[in-house]
Image 1: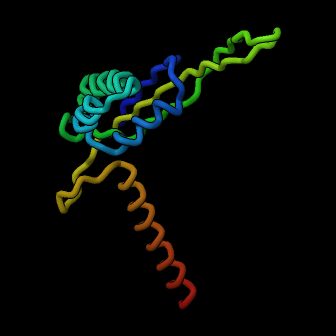
Image 2: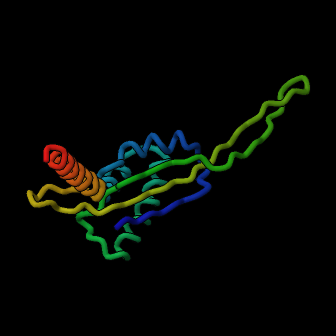
Image 3: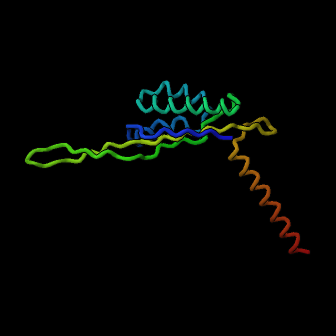
Length: 145
């Protein structure tokens, strides 16, 4: 089960927000929160707010606190504000003020037989590998018979 939150129209360029997102991708949720508190960036405060909201939503969905991790985090470009700054001799320069749409997806890690945490993505990949290998064996068995 996943939890997804979207914060739209953040008045900051997506490029600046992405610098912070790379630090928390794939980490446990509470570890990511601690990491964000230490970063001296304005975007870290905004991402922290979104992450707290996603954790709260995950708790409402009865997800286990110890197993929640940052599955996906994105900063997509929103609409841009176009402004004009006057220059000398009647000229004008365009100023582009960018906005961001922040998406945070939290997942729950599942514990495998060997007590190693496995995400839901890894589960489906291993399932596909196992199913694919058994089909190959069936084809070779039919061909030899």
